[in-house]
Length: 189
Image (spheres, helix red, strand yellow):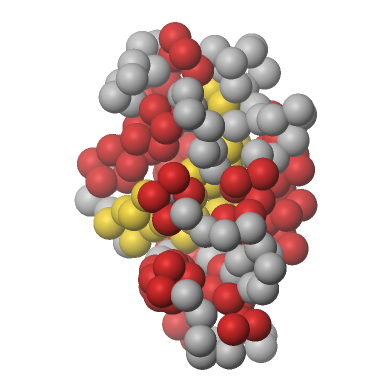
C-alpha cells in the first residue's frame, strides 16, 4: 500500500521530526511505500485559496501534493500540541485540499514535551480529519517526553514503543485495505 505521512511543524528546534522519521521507517519496514510531507520542505503559502479554487492553475507544489494524495491509501498525521491544539503549520497543510482526502483513513500519531503526548491536539484533529473526508481510526499513538523517547534520528529509546506501534499500524492497515476495496467499487458521490 502507499501512504502519506503529514508532519506539522516548522519550528527551528522541532523534535517531532523524530517521530515522523520513525513512522516512515516502520511503514517502509512493513513493505509499504511512504512519502513524508514536511512543511519545511514543501513551504506552502498561508491558505488563501484551496487547491480546487485555482481551477487548473495551481502552484506546482499544490499540484505535486494533489497528485500524491489522490494515489495514497491513507494518511498518517504526525502532530505536536501547541497551546493544547493543532499546530498552525499542520492546519495550513491540511486545509489546502479536500476531495483529494476523501474515502481514505487517517491515523493520528501525536507527541509533546510533557507526559500527555499531544492527545489534546489529537482530539481536535479527529474533528478536522472527519470534516476533510479522511476519518481517523479509533486508536491514536501518543508519545510523551519526545526529547527522550526518540533519538535524533528517530530510534525509539523505550522498548514499549515498537509493540504499541505494531498494534496501531495493524489497525490502520486494516482500515486502509477495507476502504481501498470499497473505493474500487465506487463511492457514494
